[in-house]
Length: 137
Length: 137
DNA sequence: CAGGATCCTAGTCGATACTG
DNA sequence: CAGTATCGACTAGGATCCTG
Image 1 (tube, each protein chain N blue to C red):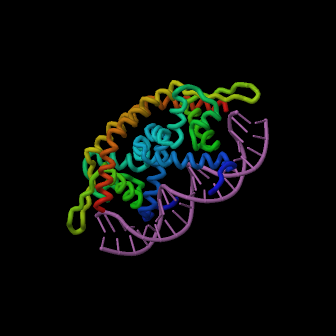
Image 2 (image 1 turned 90 degrees about the vertical axis):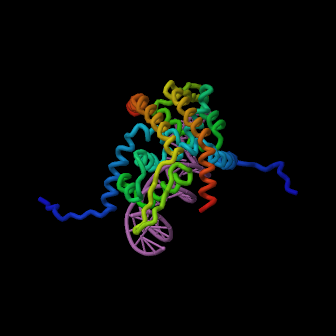
Image 3 (image 1 turned 90 degrees about the horizontal axis):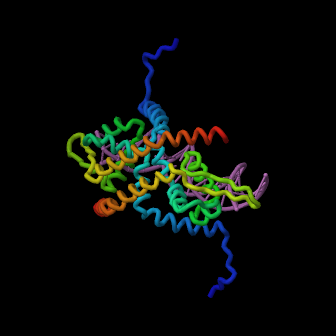
């Protein structure tokens, strides 16, 4: 039976455990999951591209300029898994795959607008603060 | 004078330019800046730690468990630069540095709550969608 | 006490080439 | 057409050590 009376843990070790525990329930934290999704570089573009109606894979690739096939697929798969959009395969030659926002995905739009509104309303203050900070540093 | 009549650009080159152009104004896009801030791993914790009142550097380090000095300082500097919190140095031996939310930083709290509320309200649907997706894959 | 400086690692992003 | 597979480049995060 081990004796722990004099076991010493460094601050780094304590932090390590704490971070792992924290990361564990961070992954389960709804707010953070949502923020992680929302702040993803491509998610916003894909969602707003689909806001006007369904699009096919290559159409998305053209509308969301700058996205490589890999990133596009990755983004679409994640959003599909989370129920934000639906993927429909139409059997034809060549095959047609159509992506469309679900109700859940469409529910995201007002929130995006709210965030955008907050940002546009307060960003002047942020820029002013930065100017001051950068100026007298 | 160069002749560009037959210059050919690959799809990748076109994407590269497009992405650079996009990234350029992404950095200036208020919405994305805000989301980048909000979704940062430590920002939320620091802000909510300071919601109840000012704290000193090492107090923050204890409350925000798992943060290394580097990350803590980095987070604090960014938030200070953006005018979200204020940093006050009190000359003493040893020196005391106190951090406190500004009005702008406090304005962030309702928005955080709104995001949290949306997440908690909709996350069951997301989890249900994931269960379906993971199940019949 | 409150950080700055340095080095290192692990995960992410994107290009490219290939397939049903 | 709608992807998948693989590989290299990059960089954010963190450990560690040091200073006014």
